[in-house]
Image (tube, rainbow, N blue to C red):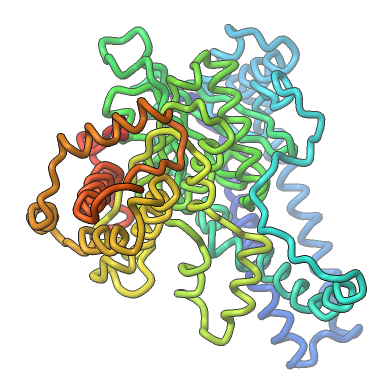
Length: 513
């Protein structure tokens, strides 16, 4: 069904009632799909899965499908007798056939099933890659074994690998990305449509469909602030949403309110995007988004900022690793590794299966990818985060954002972040208020000017590429100062829970030396 953003489309009675019936049938089918394992088990226990019972049931099912097909035909008749719908179809066909900016501008005034939207940008328009299966992800190092032992070991592990695959592709990915569940999207649809209309009407948002290298279609929204009175408008912030976030109602509003140009996109399988949100599909989608920003929207990589909330840190760190010229990276309420968080919500007896499933199929290795990026980074830690803590929200030291910071600092400044440096940073991370943070720095007499001069001197002599060996010939007191100084510059605390929107005045770019 099409809806004009400036004047709502009014379906006639026949279309309205038939569409309601089909929508109800769609919801019931989705409920049946998710409950089918339990239903089959119940029917089997009750002895209903016999030929004498299945044949009559198949007749009922065929009759129901025949009736639904008739309802779909009635909806079609209702639409084709409506002049507004005929006008919409004419514009849609012209957009596929001609595709001029004027036609697409007319099409943008309608809101309809995004599957029918024409493709605006293809991954291979500018890419020289010939492999359409996907871009590369970081893989764990292979374990070297003899050929015989390797074959026997593979046979022994086959049942476990099958179990991991089933877990990952059934309830595993849906637990990890609940926003891909159809019922949740159906419940959120009015809110998503309202958010989308707001972006178009208030911010001049332009919707576009991108085709990724795996064939998934990615739903995007671009708000252009270039040429406005906002000085930040020349910079583009690409937003990567959380596991139940959509650009229509997600973290996109934070940089938008701060005056930046913004590009939002939905994960594969979310709202208008097609596919399944697995790591490879996520990276493929992000690759298309970055290429679109550079080659179609006209932003240079050093004018692009990546902003990610929660699980969006995976695609943001992947893009930062793959496009090292990108200006900056901001990770809000993100984590270093998925395994500890997955183990938190699963039974202890499943530890081996959970670890294997994540590593093989759902490996969101944010920390490893982050360490491959050379540019400025800012981590935002929620002090009351209830999602990425491994114990309770009040235990701030179990927040996996701490581990993300430590991995970054240990990679970039290994000589500073020895055993003593790690202890200093952990002591600072344990502070639960700004006053306690200041007290920790005062206790160890951290002098910002001295730290800056040391770091600048090293950069001028050895260049900017990490890792640095600064602190190698330094007294312990100096290394302690540098460790605390660097931690303060790379991490910003925000006193809030995981899902509280970050206010625009708390959105700032990472520290640059």
